[in-house]
Length: 172
Image (cartoon, rainbow, N blue to C red; front, top):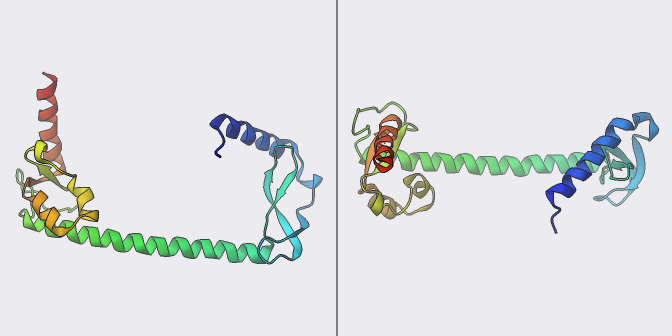
């Protein structure tokens, strides 16, 4: 069950109050406590926060287990980052191919310097099935080719100018 925003705000206000009004010398920095990981009674460090009642909160792990825990989080994050980098490269390669299929430059002004500044504009928005930026990351190449046939390659500025004209026509 999740707490309401009001409950969380009250709880955090109380914790801040205890943090501001309680002297650091009023309680020990370490206490003997059963470690969550190694199950031995070892000194556990104060974690710089308080419960709602004003009691200091201590880590659930001893210093040695806490260091192992922090390293494991970093390794998980590192592997996730490597996966994301690989996926970004894969998506950029697919965009490069799609851009090359549509001529490699803006159909209006001829801009071609930055791949990130080139966008796919559906000539007829009624026929648009999905945004190509999304499709590049999760659709088959055959689907992307079908969608590319409905598009023209534009730089970001020309694309925005086209949309501005469309929006002004709708307003009038």
